Image 1 (cartoon, one colour):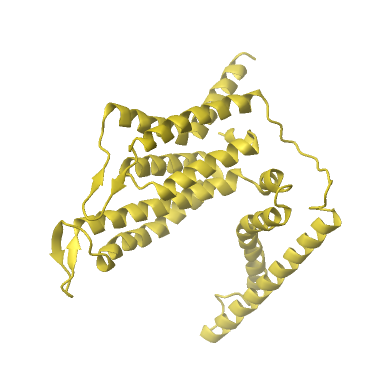
Image 2 (cartoon, rainbow, N blue to C red):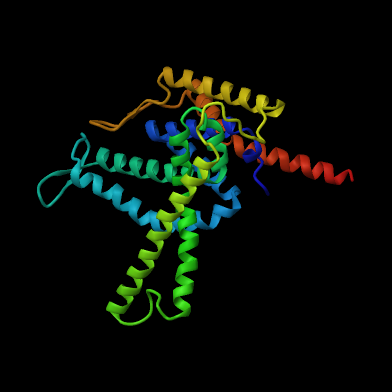
Length: 297
């Protein structure tokens, strides 16, 4: 299934990711964290072209995240629930272990959300939003976002070319492999610098950032954008009101305290879940609509 949420106006895309990223980074309530984590994983799975990279990232990140969760009790000894002692005599507390797990979950969900963001928010969308407000910074930021995937693709090309002449980083003894690796690194650094200069010269030649400069754009804020934007505002407003009443409160030092489950708090959690799953609902709706139209042909 193709992603339909990416076809909406850049304001919708950017606003959605801005909200979910800020909430994921600043609210450590366990329910909010789990909702954000589940939603990010589901949406990453919907975006087929990052599904494989998500699986590889999780494979390598899980041991690191487990290490982060276990290292927190080693350096943080705050908490009232002592479950043991280190060899140094410092206590091992339940609160420090739980907080380490919370930080690990927050770390992985932010990474997944950023992966989805890089897929949906292309450089042309970002420049469309901020090109007139902060032209230089928006250009640099868009170049940074596209640099990593472009660098990886070019690295594969260079590595394959060096492998064909027997000079890649896996050929020869240790010193030869190191020398080949340094050669590839030198090629990549030179390419990156030249590419940045060419891009900046090209944008200057086109008059980018000049006052009064007009630009063509395919983005239009139409009726469907109005509907989705209204739904986002309603869901976010209800969630923020719930946060104001303490539904997102959580503390892990000196004791674990968080807002429990009441009728109102559950409604706030479900509202936030609906906001996080909004792109998936949009994709599902568009898929059902497309199947219905095909059945009538």
